[in-house]
Length: 194
Ligand code: AMP
Image 1 (cartoon, rainbow, N blue to C red):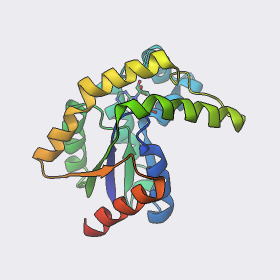
Image 2: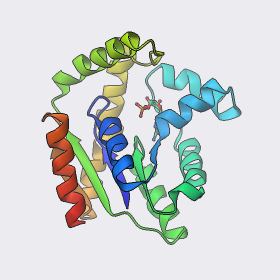
Image 3: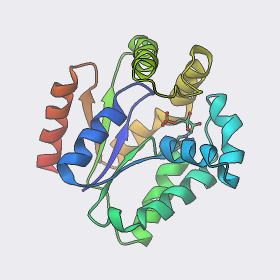
């Protein structure tokens, strides 16, 4: 099973992807997590990505395409994977299609979580509060200024992916404003039919 989750920051992509990993035994490939790990390890990619990420902007297609291509080749992706936060631009979607074709693979579904933008800032604030309550590390881009910038980047660069995947006939849409369990059930219905 090879899936893509689309939706703005705070839509619940990460939450739903992590529930599915357990169910299908396939990894969740979050480019945001991979980039944060590279920043923490101060790799060359991490050094290039840090300032861009902190400003809420998008890291270059070249960097993320390469990270994803390498990650997909790892053994735990043999039965599939869930892409969370990638592709984020139409050129990334085109690169992904080429990348998968080159590896002899294809996508099973592209699932978009539709949410009201007005709810997203509140969700980000809740995520920060929950992380602090658990004694975790708050993301350096989970602050109102960077978050607003991430929403602008989403609207300008990522939202056009819906039309892109609608035109390829791969897009399925789920109401991301529903309760987590309800969203999970709707996704399961789509996957059963895929
Ligand atoms: P996320 O954890 O998905 O919200 O991503 C956090 C940040 O990592 C984003 O604001 C971007 O700076 C960067 N990032 C993650 N995925 C991508 C991607 N596919 N393309 C470009 N930048 C990305």
